Length: 121
Image (cartoon, rainbow, N blue to C red; front, side, top):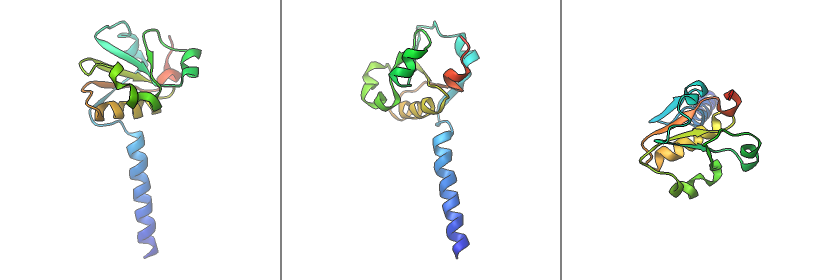
């Protein structure tokens, strides 16, 4: 009986972690190399979901700083008619932000894998 309970705990833990790490359904993934080719595209909107301190220390020109914890309250600053490209430091917060955007009805959302840690601009 104990092994059944332990097995269920492990399954729930794996399910929880996978939900936080795996990309959301409908969210595209992009490398920083791919990002470099499109940073001047006015048909897209670019957001950096790191803290203001991280953003001011180093950011990519054209990216708007909307920290992930403020995103839900600042959706009105983004257009649902344009693709949203999301970046953070490592790709974890931008993945979370991408999931939020997808759930809020943004049809085209792309997460930058590896984030600023992978950016060589």
